[in-house]
Amino acid sequence: MLTLNRVIPMLAAVTPGEGLFALTAAARITVTPETPELLAIGGRLAELLRPATGFALPLTAGSPQVPGDIHLAITDADPALGSEGYALTIAADGITLTAHRPAGLFYGAQTVRQLLPAAIEQQSVQPGPWEIPAGTIRDAPRFAWRGAMLDVARHFFSVLDVQRYIDLLAAYKLNRLHLHLADDQGWRIEIKSWPNLAHHGGSSQVGGGRGGYYTQAEYAALVRYALDRHIVIVPEIDMPGHTNAALAAYPELNGDGIAPPRYTGTEVGFSSLCTEKELTYRFLDDVLRELAALTPGPYLHIGGDEAAATPEPAYIRFIERVQAIVAQHDKQMIGWEEVAKATLRPEAVVQFWTPRPEGYALACAAAQDGAQVILSPATKTYLDMQYDPTTPLGQHWAGYVETQAAYNWDPTTFIPGLPAANILGVESPLWTETAETFDDLAFLAFPRLAGHAEIGWSPAEGRWWEDYRVRLAAHGPRWDALGVNFYRSPQAPWTADPKK
Ligand code: ACM
Image: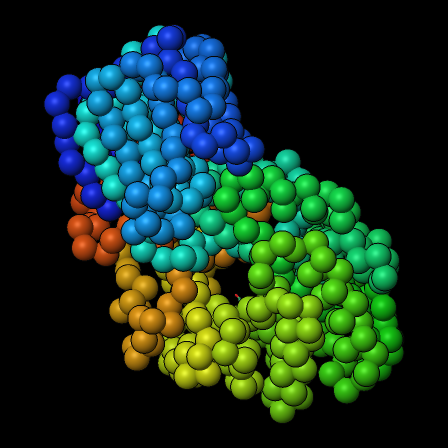
């Protein structure tokens, strides 16, 4: 069925028109002005559309539009589109996509992709036709932070796996990938001044596998890959708890100076950097300096959660010292909600995760310090929670989170007393105690992550489950075409028809 109502996240405004646009073998993708960034966005759209259509879709810059083309343009005419919004006109004689900033064109291109039949996602030539009903769309995000977190510490995931995850995030207009790079079970990023972190600390994972780590060159390439898809990578080194891998690599960071054995279990709350030694702060200055140099984005995440092995007064002094180190490296500190026990600098960002009175109080305390809050309530956004008791992967300490429950909540009403002005956005953490392969990640993330993407992007009004579940079902054939091992929740009317 031809429809403009299949896009996730839901479009902010759609006006249906008369007739339809058909993508044909004669079509070109044109961009103005001719900048490397816009050529890259146009080129990526062409790469998405070529395999299934078999069309050449040449990319040309600055040329006048010929009927049948897809034209991408940056204009100053509509600054209200902001840094990520776009406008799309679909007509029988062509598609015109305009934005105020390049990110808007990137997101508009994702919308064009989703407006085409699901077969567009196939990697071999499909019969078509490649039609979109005429209409106009005006779309911009509700929240600035639309994130996903991947825990590469409990199980290590290859550069290729992370790139594949990034591609899926980009398709749903997410713009942050938070990488949980260090935990008790493994340290996953090369730090040149403390090489044993990766060499020794990286050589384990949950269950005792080989683990692994990213060299700085590999990590820098991942950062670039993500930026090319308008995703900022946010690196997290969890501290002062969740640090057994670092303590095993450098026992002098431990209170008793003795190296603990490597840890391959799934308990939390037993490790702590020694908060009383000056060496600990020299170590953190080195680590955060190297990480800051690898990070074009403004944020460094310092974890701070579940520090049960650190006495609270020492924890508070530790967080206050670490946030000063982060600031010295010209970055904004992000921490899990517990960091709000300390007095935060106003540029701090706090990630709420515990939907209980303590968690609500910490989120509100952070807002009182002037901090922005990211909402990651475990009962809604934790992608490692089982869908139901039969789900073969995941945990259920925060309950079972089926697709509808993951979708049915709103960031501005979730935390009593938290001012809307302090809400930066939404992020979906995927902890990997039970996930070992890309297929495992995909099964836990999809379909729930698509719903979180909609919560982060789409206007609250007009967003409702009965409409969403029908749009969601139309994404099943897309994920099948992409080889995404998604969970066929009984809550959505899945179809196998790739013409949908
Ligand atoms: C967390 O789930 N420990 C942030």
